[in-house]
Length: 232
Image 1 (cartoon, rainbow, N blue to C red):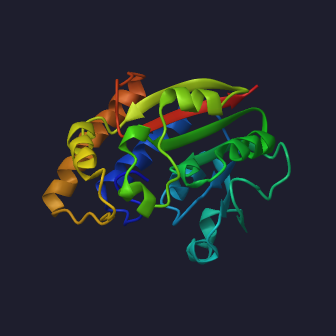
Image 2 (spheres, rainbow, N blue to C red):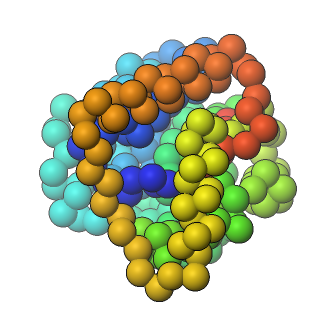
């Protein structure tokens, strides 16, 4: 994740991102899909994913998997994106929201994602943007890298890119200044305790960006890149 790596469902970034996820999934026009939530974490996105089909989950952390409510998944497995423990051609949708930046070998992960996707299936994702902002904050969160669009186009070779856009543009300038100032620091503070009013204000700001995403309007920059790819 970019601003927060973990938090509660009340966090502005998590709530607004779930709205974005809903917009991306609704654009696929799929019904009763078999979905893999790759790197499901604490499962904030699972209620949304379940509206579009049957969801299987995979994560590297057994304790996290054990915390997931049983009614929100069909099957769960412990594993990594570099070795997905499901048969080939299993899924209509693979979702990886702020996941592949955590994977050491993202090329191997994409080979696995393509393998488990059915022909015509979709890969839906978010990643942190702009490698030049990579800092101690990213290291503390376990990120190997941040991405730009050319990096992703190369990574997604063999998939049809249907959508590749920026999100969280509203906070790009202040967060960029903060990251540049802190870039040389060896320490990072991954906590973000905001007053309720500030949290709500930022949520509605990002909701505005969600509406723009629904219309298909592309933003010129942002802290997150989101997209949809299709297996040919």
